[in-house]
Picture (spheres, rainbow, N blue to C red):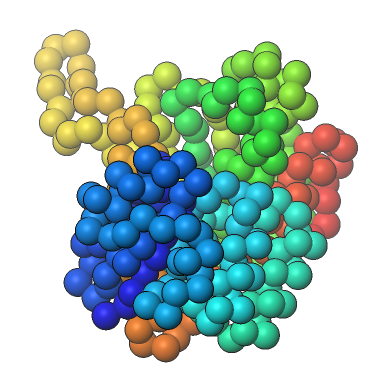
Length: 328
């Protein structure tokens, strides 16, 4: 039985805390959040205790820590938990600075503890099945990957100012997925972006509409399309084209019901929020973490996977604002 403490009782902390409490091989022991009512509410809902963050990290009654706090705190909490000998699951990113990620990973390596980074989309049942079929040779040699990811509505400009920008905050999930599906490292990236959705995002120095092209050493290509606005719901699609054919994953609709009349076919809208769309992915990624820690193996995505995705996001940001391709 893996004894777990959660740092952060906000939106994502509630998801991971609830999943930990419901897992048959885990027990949620404690919850910490600077906002005491949030910690107390999650603790009461899951049968845990509300405590201070240093109590979670220092407790001998806790084996693993789930870090669901703001980005600026991630690296410090990872290091503290690693020095305390805890296994760590941390929401992406480790930090917005690649150098800070590198220094953090040195501490993790020295401590020898398991670290998993929360790129939840790898665990989406549809995307995971796509990966399995690609690896099994269903489309032959992978040649071209297309990833489309569009949010229903843009975040407020205040969030954008501290997020690291679209490439580091939003597209980083797609960059990780592209690298995961390509099966080899991209060596070149070219990005373009515009502010077409919300002028305030542009005034903050960011973009809300972007596209990226990446190429690997063998010539495989990935293209990614992002937008902060999709009037029809949360748009999440992938196509993988190969020497033997095409594999694709479509959107998840609110139901599978279709109505056909002389005017054509109609269907329910796609799901409109990431917590709904990726509910199974969040549950399955935590299960993968718990299973790996109990088995004594290193979970994935690793800290190094997190660093690679961050370097790609940095390169995409540089390319977008310089207008030039960037070598990786």
